Length: 292
Image 1 (cartoon, one colour):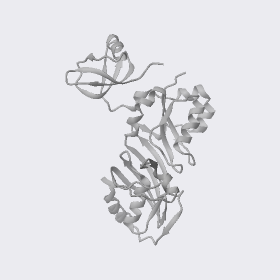
Image 2: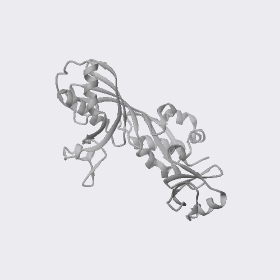
Image 3: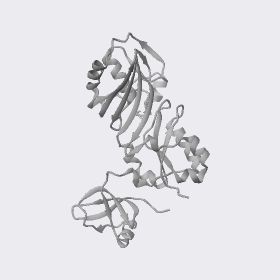
Image 4: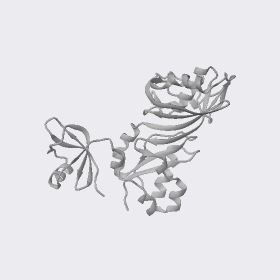
């Protein structure tokens, strides 16, 4: 059975991403693993998990764009920005119409700056912000640039909004909800969040923990995809068996492909890992995927 690959998990509510990862590791009987972009306990949806050698490509999924389905409640603010937090303020919701809301949402489309929430895994002087928040300590957080590629208003139901958000890495949907509420003058918090896409992967292809449990270890491992499925946007280069042997030993080889960094390396259909082609058309290994 394979010990390396990418598993698309549909994370349930009530678990941290690390707890969901831990359960998946036990069900697959594997130890070396990591997730690729945390979801809050309240949030559900696509959580790509990398096992074994596939952990070497996890950074590309961490850096990938994401898509979310988000539900907001206007007029109620919480200390965490979501439904798991304590209510800290309420306010009357102004009259809403789709046209006016869409004009307001236009402020948040494209490149914006966003202040991360206190309840987050970011660090301040070596401590996680959520640890400080639990201790009642709030620190200044500098705004960070993010990109909202698409922000679609799906539904308006009284004080509740449903949005679909396509965004860059590092975007906090809780912060987006709070900022929308602030722009309306009434506050808001996130009541539901579901990740629908991460990089090249879609929620429709994800599996639940219950299904993995029903599968058993062998069938669960068979659901894993090869590591290079995370890298469809990278250029690729094919080399012969002799060059592949040298690459696996950490040596550089001549290559006729155009310069690129990183590139996917293949030999006889086997993914060797990531390499770099320099201006002299020399291909060198950057991160090798070792065969099992």
